[in-house]
Image 1 (cartoon, rainbow, N blue to C red):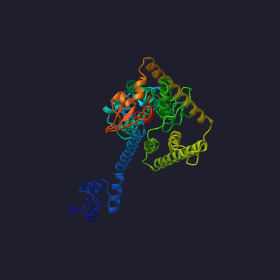
Image 2: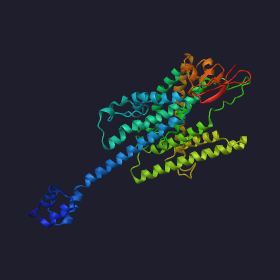
Image 3: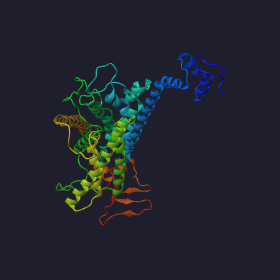
Image 4: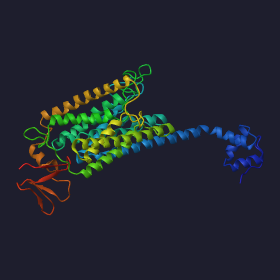
Length: 460
């Protein structure tokens, strides 16, 4: 019950009691009636709403920011789970571990580091090493959205995905030390420089760089690589190409006549499971790259990106299924998996600017030319840096394991164990926990290469 016994300003006791029933406290009511001079209930309530409009907008802005940050973090979680879709066990774990250290110490600063007030650098960032600026600064509002912790996490998940692409290309023949050094080099320097070129507002290839009279530096458009077809997948693929080329083929990959010999996979079930995990993670990879969802326009874009991502994967899988059947007569599940991944990689760059029914349309020649420039720039940078690294390691004798270790399998050679519990490798036959072996007539057995998830025959 209110404690009003007399009128305040132009408000009668009845008006004061009515305002109290709306939940206004005595201090607020006294301010409305005395200072603002309202006389009836409706006028006082309108004045109260207007006086709080600023705080309401501020709260709404805070909610939108929190929603955007949660969206980015959740997308990062999805991208990180893509590590489960890869096929090299310990090396993929170390891609994430070593990559986290390299990206934290140097990579994020090289990618996005630019001190306020300093002249922008189109080649490489040079600020916020080891997140020193992020750690010491209390961000708020738009500043937090642009430089907060969540962006480091999201970008690190992309970095880990890029690094892990190489592992399969050098499976069963790259030394453990060389791979660890590669993971640190790529995540701390090679990949971040490309991120700066294409995604940072000061990058020379960036569509966000408007330093030329409000237009991008390159042909006034800049490269459109929304979620990283070039920055992530092309970089990882070219690094894998350089590594595989310099380290050489696996033992048994070619016969004496130079004909390619198929090395069958360990488990089609694991391949399919890995493909679905990667496809699932791609729904964080592509939609998450929008970096915002807290408005109708942003939510519409994110939704369309998700649809395009789903359709691109499905179309790629169907295309490879039909192609494989037309050329071999087989319905090949592994080909479908490869087709799905190819479709997902292809849509990653343009998923925000195309419609589900469109394939190659719109824009003009300048946009296409800039995309070619991006391809050439990424190819030149990645091949030169990673080629030099693998070449130097190979010359130093630190890149490839011995033939004996390769034949035994790196699980056994490096760690003296296989992935299967209770199993061990003994000579050329596979011996399991109960002593039963699997061998053929000439004494050759098999072992499962869980470092590369492949199966092959051992030499006598």
